[in-house]
Amino acid sequence: DAKTTQPTSMDCAEGRAANLPCNHSTISGNEYVYWYRQIHSQGPQYIIHGLKNNETNEMASLIITEDRKSSTLILPHATLRDTAVYYCIVRVASGGSNYKLTFGKGTLLTVNP
Amino acid sequence: DAGVTQSPTHLIKTRGQHVTLRCSPISGHKSVSWYQQVLGQGPQFIFQYYEKEERGRGNFPDRFSARQFPNYSSELNVNALLLGDSALYLCASSLEVFQPQHFGDGTRLSIL
Image (tube, rainbow over all chains, first blue to last red; front, side, top):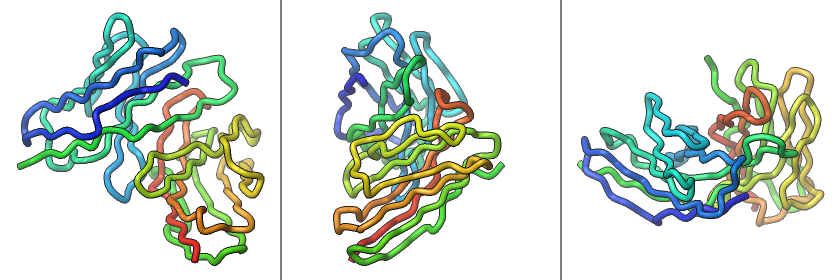
């Protein structure tokens, strides 16, 4: 699995957009980019995933660069409840023997009032 | 719809004992995965099961075992518990093995 690099921590003002970057320069053509978050004392929560096109759902938007070497998770209007550790993960899309998620240390996003 | 449910939520054991953790996937999900999360780190992959077959195993000793039942629920067993096994054990389910995994809130295991 490709490794990812994320900032250790970020701050964001409540109501503003939170933009969380992730580098995955060794990603291969059949690997998806996944984003999860983990609020203290809870299990990780799936947010969004994508292969090469930008994706949007009710929680967030995922912007993947054309060369696929980096991506940005965007929370359009951050709230205090978005304070969490955000994990960027690359995972094989198909053809694998298993589809494990390899978590790094993630980014601690703190949303301030 | 109910999410992934795990039981028990908390458990205290002593060294050398055995433990069984249980997981019920989201209805209709056929794949279950197990992860271990020690304090301050991200979850680490232990096992993945699909249609009762083991599809993958992480770098954990043979003291760790698991199985998946015909109703797609799963058990994680750990024998000869060590202090280092103290962690949050997470179960995740997915509709098919290659689709997004959805996590439960885990079982907090403490070894004394």
